[in-house]
Image (tube, rainbow, N blue to C red):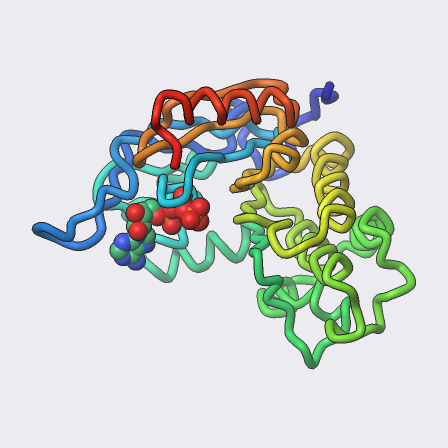
Length: 262
Ligand SMILES: Nc1ncnc2c1ncn2[C@@H]1O[C@H](COP(=O)(O)OP(=O)(O)OP(=O)(O)O)[C@@H](O)[C@H]1O
Ligand SMILES: [Mg+2]
């Protein structure tokens, strides 16, 4: 899949426009003594701006932990995480909360929509909370791109799973965050709805210059990305550019053969 090179987005620092986030020697340990688990064991990774990066690896390899640490949702045991030029490791909770609110978008497997709000209200909720007015032209473009124009007054219970997830995607995009993080964002969808959401994420990268990091188990989903980073036992063990479902699947089988993937 080819991608047009996008101009750095407003808010990005031009000198470091190419890297949206980076991890340096990140270690994340849970527990202590015999129950100590090294969820991340010295991870270095650069996340390219305006690109779609997938994180893959077997269950328990540290994918969610890496994403949570990169997004400032979880603390690290040691090492550094930067969002653009801001080192977030060491930020106090208040500053971190502010940074997450203002600069990062999330799409979770459970859509986390509020049932009492309609689709449009759900989409603009983070901006409402932050006291920011949505840019109407941008909002229209996002809503149009996700194909929700006719559904904005519907509550989540009146929407299909795919439509709910598209609301969650629109909510993440509407505030124009520097980075969107998704943990299995299509994990709860059937293949058709999943393809819709993935196609939309792809377009938001190509047409809107969005930066996306997505954790997935699914080679088909990873095939939408520009790059796949493979984790095993808390370490980055491989990466692949311009992946396709087939090449990702082959790589996963190769890991299997070496006994590295459960
Ligand atoms: N809160 C926690 N306390 C203790 N151990 C944890 C905790 N969270 C994660 N772990 C451990 O850290 C390791 C990495 O977990 P993580 O959730 O990042 O894996 P994952 O690659 O996302 O797996 P999956 O594909 O199943 O979602 C696992 O061994 C897990 O058991
Ligand atoms: Mg996980």
